[in-house]
Image (cartoon, rainbow, N blue to C red):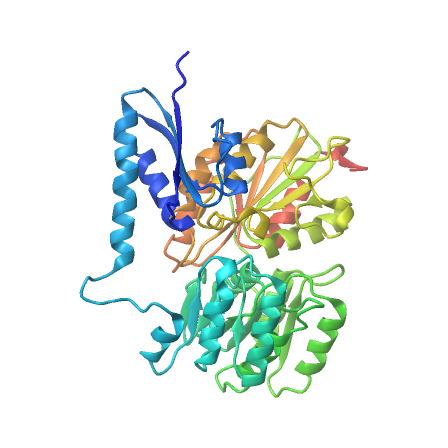
Length: 493
């Protein structure tokens, strides 16, 4: 049988992961091309390509671009390679901008051309320090979208900022609302009396979505990076963000949201909150703590607003086979929240971001071989985004894992999240709905978004329900529903 795959390395070629994702999608639309993956040859991408059945040359390294094609017939190869070249050229022309305007070559140069505003840094993590420090030296706040930034560099940036009264948002700050403008993956919401400080991107988005559904707007949401409330960073940016929102007369209630923080740091932040004039509501995930939906309800109550019934669409049937709950998330905080809820009801949950080190999954992300167990995977974790776009942009890894999970006879129920917003996929249901339709097990989905988001909340929900999923706006409610759908034989797992 003829091998209808083609793999080639292009040494020294480079494009960012989002550009290469678009190139891949463009080439996959060419007649005769069954699959196309154009990516930098990082270890993670090579592993993904190998799992897809491509043989990547042994001398591939991260400084090379790999073009992997699966063809319906050999005659498509020339068209496909020409399509790769054309798509890369088009991307280069878009990046170059108008020919008559020379783009700034450094962050400092760009900032000298404006009198205010923040600097947004979105470069590979290893290069973020220089650009962010340039912004601080120019007296500007900085939002670092980049992930995989070393901890010691984050500390250097935040200590510098603290000494100058500046704010470092991030690293890995995916969501913010500043001056009414959504940055990163932010959802589209109306301005209002709530100000959010978020050591959690998708945690912030869950609050934005729930409050929007309840008719309450958010004027500012300052992301500070998922490590800010860790024992190492100790809330350096959280304090500055809280100070600023406390000084904002439009903020009636301040909300601090975080994935599980270091307990002593959380205590320090609570003490700091007591010194502020603006009341503070905490949404800090952890064992025995309120989930994000309960926190949103507390916000509404403190504002004197009614708590609505959180919407549900579709209805999944109870599982009749398998014993394991499988959570596949693009949002790390949503994964944390689901694990905390599930662990309280089901016992240990294995994960690539486990609640305790002994529950860590292996590199294959598969359930432990010695039993059914329950697993939840965060596909946005730094280890799974090196050289790849975030899964809210590129769903490839999760879709492949969904197919493997569905084929596992131990799987009883599948739990997913879909996070909408400015920077996310333009139509996540377009790829996810057909994949869900092929899953025999019940599927429960939390769709985090608003009706004003560019993807259209209702349109996404309808497509997923039509594919057979039960869809919730609340991730906590979705998790509890997934647990309820497990077979009655789950005791002991």
